[in-house]
Picture 1: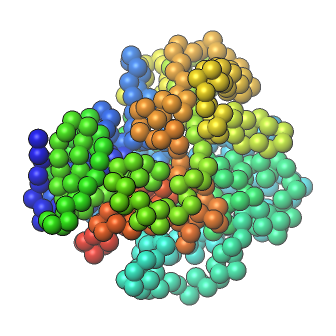
Picture 2 (picture 1 turned 180 degrees about the vertical axis):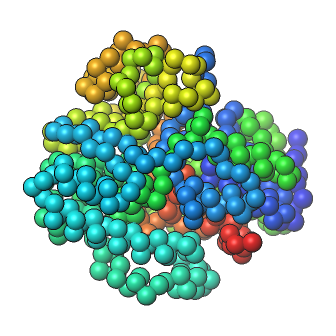
Length: 504
């Protein structure tokens, strides 16, 4: 069966995660003929949801950014003329439980630094100087981001727009370009302070997928500053972003189809169009193809004759190690939780500062009044840790490792919430194969490439592939993971196809 859309200004988007849905809404708003194909039965990808009984769980991403004034979600929703999801801005973003103390991440910068000084009375001046530089660098980067320049620049237009986005203070960033966050810690005499470094690494591993030793200094400063711009709890979960984008897209004529897995992309050279085949034998034709999935899956969709082109695009990145995640999804009795336990928290248990395999956890707790997530008297809790995928290679090892890691994670949670095991009504482990099955991520990879100097900024993968009118958005390309990152990549695709910007 052929599904042929009007080929004038036509686009097929493969993957209904936040990146793909953002691209669909933006392109549909300027009269492009758009078809979205999503293999699963849920929109949102790693920011989607799933239901178990009366409980609703976020698949992965839980803490929202980008809804503040000037944030990427706010700008896109304003451009589209739609209301953003209902949200709560957090003045206290999260608690961070270190082996030696508990810290609070405050949205207000001055409060944040002052409270850290109280927690670390032995290094107050060093902390002041460190954060003064972090915030200065982040402020300069944020000025550049107003224009949302494309990195890495590939065309004359890209270079021109990047040049025009530069501000007088941009030159002050040049000395930091090849430095890491560890270099900044060393500069301020903080690299040997194990507790504070542990605190910093906890922020970086969650947002940048890498610790201070490798993290790009520029990207790291931005990551450490982003919560101060605004961190939000979305009622129900981040899937509300996807629902808003799908609802708007369908209202303007975008065709959005669940349960359609793209299995092959061919080229009709005579008609100068791409042909996309799904697993049911349906055929879709369009001028443009936007791939909203990890770049590691690209070669599986294209004929062998495109291998050289795709090898050139991917370079050596397709073989780079990317994290998997182990998640626990729990329905809890509300009474089992300590009073006023925060909605978001980190637990870091390793005395040596290890950030993976259950030694570092990120916890997301549903709001007590969020009836979408859990019935009255109950809360949902999502807990995740980074894991190396080679630890999950064989069936025997997989099952035993999942059980052992789940117990280790529960032990870590118990160190902060002593009554956690008594409060568990239901628990569902989400190991890498579950991520592969339900979100289509090969081998369960999540989070995109670590934002080291080898993969960030000018060394990022471009949203432009080496195939004509084949584009990529999502966490594989600049600027990386998270809903704000994938939304920026979707905007870059929209801008490159149409020439339009987010100003009406």
